[in-house]
Image: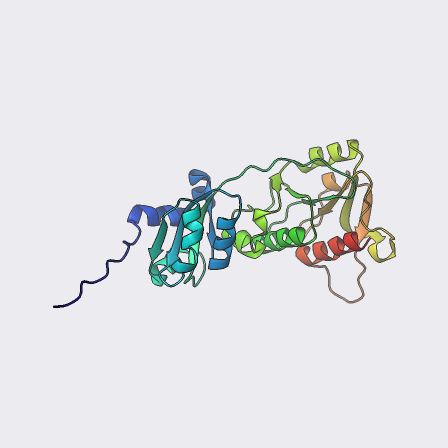
Length: 263
C-alpha cells in the first residue's frame, strides 16, 4: 500500500496573481493603495518593521525562513513555486519571496538644531532615489522631502535600491518653494548643491547645524530649478579635479552627507 501523498498548499488564485501584477504599474499601485517589496531579505525586514503588510508570497524553499514572522503578524504565508514567484515579480529572477505592502503616511518633522532634512528637486532616476534613501538612512538624516516631479518612491526599482531604508527614513512629497520658504522662516539654513558655489573642502562646517539645516540635491541633468535656487542661503560645490562633466546625484549626496557628519 502506497503512503498518502503530502498535500501541498494551493497556488494563488488568478485574481491574486492579477493583484500582484497590477502593482507593477503606477496606476495599479494607486488603485490598490499598495506596492511590492521583493526578495527574501527585504521581505523579512518588512515583516520585522512597523509597516502594514497585506500579503506575503514565498517559494517552497524560502517559506520556512518566513513562517515565524508571518505567524507573529497573524498572516497566512502563500507558498508558491519558484517559477510562479518569478512570474509575479518585477525581478528577472526571484526564487525567494515578495510581499504586498500597504501605504503609510509620514508626518513632517520639525527642523531641529543638529539635524538635517534632505530635499530632492526633480530626481527622476529610480535607482538614484533608492540609493539616496539608503544614504539618508546610513547618515541619520531626519527626513527626505521630494518635489512632486521626483520619481515615485514606491516603484520596485526604488524599493530594491533602498535595501529596506524606505522603512526607516520618512519620505514626504511637497511643493519645494513653499517648503523651503517656511524652512527659512523657521531659521534653518538652506543649502544647495550647485556647480558654482563654495568649495565644500574649504568649509569648516559644510552643512551648518544651527536651527536645523536643509540640503537640496537637484535633477541629474539640469541641477536645481530657478525657484529652488532662489530659496538657498548657501551654495555648495564639490570641487572637480578631473574632466567629468558632473557627478551622479547619489554620489554627490553621499559626499555632502559625509561632509556634514565630519563637520
